[in-house]
Length: 215
Image (cartoon, rainbow, N blue to C red; front, side):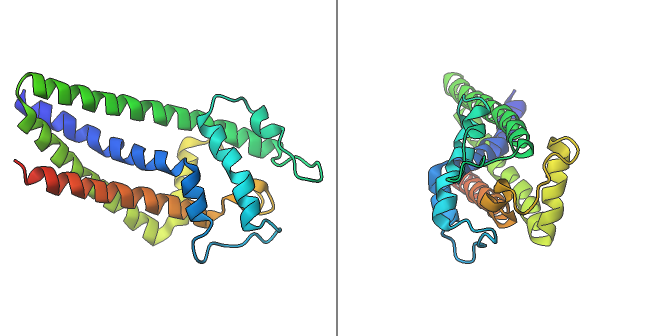
């Protein structure tokens, strides 16, 4: 029991940390920081920083709220033209479905970790639980390190393979003039990967070193 208890805890840690990093990306604060970073690419078709800060939160909020597709479909530019075309709307619907699945599994993961912690306290196995968290921290460090190396070596290939894995055909490909690309250029997604990776890496190190020292 001691062995499986600790390793089950360890296996749940990476997704818990990665999920938390992803959830932090889905906040207005991240957009405020990201669009103000030095060197963030300007929009060749005319979006200013304020335009991006005006429109991007709608796409972000849609992923986590209970609204239907009309939440985005009813948005228009000042001249009355729709903000997103039909292809973009279909993709956002796909992204929302994936996001909801990921967040549900993340909450389940956190719940299992909490139950294991409660169980460890009830049966006097807190040292095993702490050891599992520590091992999970180091497991996270290893997994994230691999991903960050891939980001550094060829992010576009990683980005492409990710979309081919989770989305059908070429439904995720758009013109540079499309709103989604203008709001969220490749640099945006690269920074998302780096932020999530760095957050998870540091959190994993904290668990690995901090709880490992308390054994």
